Length: 292
Image 1: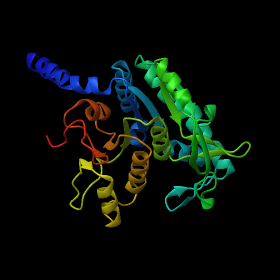
Image 2 (image 1 turned 180 degrees about the horizontal axis):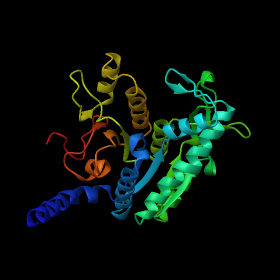
Image 3 (image 1 turned 60 degrees about the vertical axis):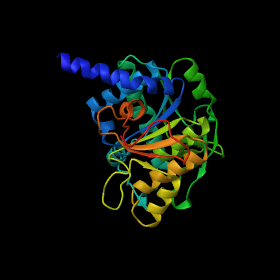
Image 4 (image 1 turned 90 degrees about the vertical axis):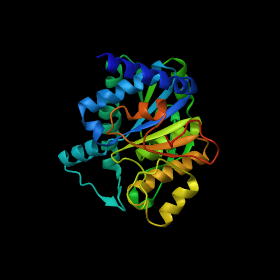
């Protein structure tokens, strides 16, 4: 028992410089993957987000919800079609997407945060014209690419001590337009608009891997482009690294792609010496070492 208490105290002591470092920082977290359908994992994630807010971090949660969208589409008899791995979103589909993301998934996450003692408000990209989109690809229908961001509402919530939870549904340039936005894309756009200190992309894999299958703990944008050109970064990892590179260009200090299946993944990344997953940043000196 005493040994466990000493280990806990040592962990807290190790966290002190990072708690000081991230006090007042903006951290955007993309929450998705299998954890969204697991009640215990959802509660653990919510507890981590509440702790982040409690120690002075300003977290923004952006979420997906693909499996739940697929489930409701199937129940409604609406066929799911994909082009190059991306969902084709026609008028009927975008209505279901908005219903599931804003009415079901978003409120579940808000409730989970509230259950852990936090204060949270659910939003979508439509609210206060936070995210305005144009069609990303005519073949995909109402799949949006953000072209205008208005994030003052998020700053207002920070000031009130409230955690924003954002569904990736956006308005368009025309009247009554609704767009489905890829969750990673939405998180990157929000992080860029806020000039966030960190963008954490939670996934169902352990991070970016090299040719031998080992996780690369730290990469520069140049290394990401090289691994992509050589086909090492491929498949579903490409949209995530593309989001990371664009976010860096927009002023985000660093992006981490990490395994959301690991307990307390966000806390491990922010508040421990070792961190978690694959950190992508420009070449200026980083705040904490990765080679320990």
